[in-house]
Image 1: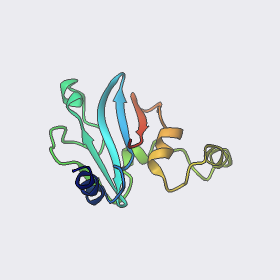
Image 2: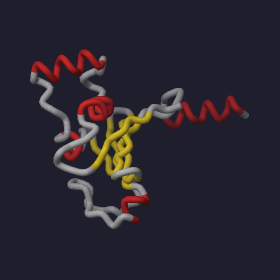
Image 3: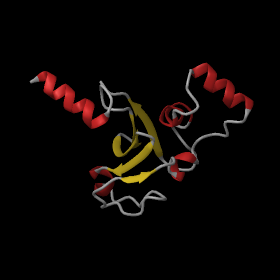
Image 4: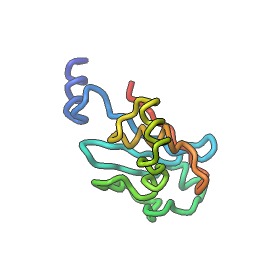
Length: 128
């Protein structure tokens, strides 16, 4: 049975484990989630967002949407949080942290966990 479960997980995710994802928090409550799978980005609100009666995040107007928002590019709300990677001090920080430039989720978690433009906190979760 374990082998079947493991194989189904591999087929579903095309990974040995689920891919990492970025949790979006407001205070101590997780209100959203961003994933990258097979080169596409997926964002979804969690029930806590609706319970808190928050205004929609720019670019994600339907807080009641059942299916995740999907994009081939990092959504503007998240992309705008990233610092300019052409700046020498940002390049140095990326090297120091050993983050690949194409690992947008880790870049967001490492460089843009907090933002002065919104109250949300980003946390990267690796699959276990």
